[in-house]
Image 1 (cartoon, rainbow, N blue to C red):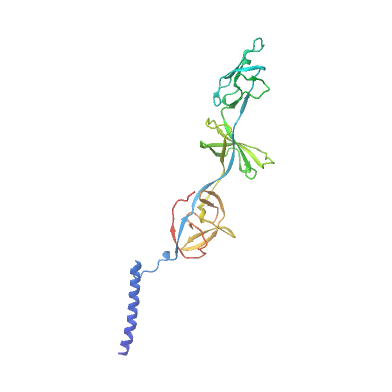
Image 2: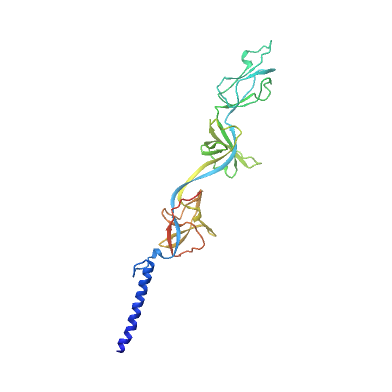
Length: 306
């Protein structure tokens, strides 16, 4: 009887513990007796996969639209007046086309060709600098400025610290007020730096776009190179005493890795070493996570915003 009285309480205790465990399992939605899933342990953190991407290195410049080649038109005769102007600014002209006529003076010994002003090259009339009734002279300012071939380009000022990256042939995107972006290409780079401004000059060809007017201010972005590597959101980079680091989730544990970073594009940054494609990186790095912390990775595939 003594043994019987000692056995009942111990058995009742085991039954109560088992019942409690079953109740907890039912309330949590997990099957009774199921082992804890290690991937469900720890704090949930948002992660992204490191992906390979290519980044462009660019230099931003600004300047003024100029004619690639400009021809000045002057008379071959002195002491006569302009009697007729036959073109307007922006008109396309051919080589030899008559731009203006001059008044003949009776008794003046000069060939008939001296009394007309002709275009020396084909192109576009950039500026008319005379008017009907004005006296003409070879020593005066030119009567017309002709943009040879109609070609214009951006004459851009470039800081001395960046001009070393600019090279002939590099593509550029030029933003012109009222026209939007147009394509261009670096044609020349000055070998000299202005001592006063510490800037050099480059000319970016814009072709024969008649919409672009000489004298217009414009900005350009020159693509000076590119680099490809692992890409993560800029928010995943944490800067500390040892430089930039990322927090990687591996086997549900946090690993902190120092990473050299490179070029940026919008909201993404190039990681040159330390990450492989597919590595799970904490999207928003912060001090609340430490090396070795157990976490539960939640993949966030929301596109990176610029």
